[in-house]
Image (cartoon, rainbow, N blue to C red; front, side, top):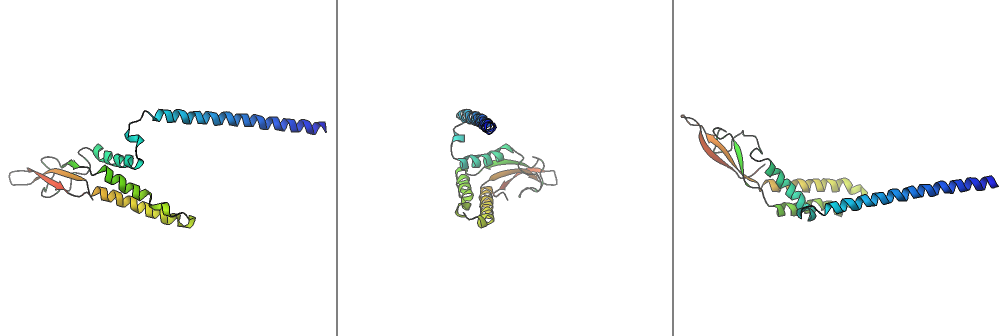
Length: 168
């Protein structure tokens, strides 16, 4: 009988030790979360805002980061018929509206919220994917670029500007 009591005491001591380790690990994890959250307070004001606005800003920043080479210099954009003498460079005129893109992305990502049943999950994912692609396609329609190319003449290429009204 005493042997059983001793085994039970050892068992409970092991459980208490594991519980102490768990509590210490849990507190360490919570402290790491607090430290991370405090480090995020120093971020820019834009990052504290709307997540959809941040996504839209990232998409527009991508186009800005491409500088003068968002597309290949050929084929030339009419009325240009050759990339020379200016090299087929694209100069941005407008990157579209960040707020419009953010609103479209908000609608797109929230499309699947009405599908709550498990069998409808593939339908919801297709609906969201389609809505996101439509939002991005709509944004592409608002991008505007000038194409710096040229027109071939008997004397040599003459600089010319082509307007890119729609990016597709």
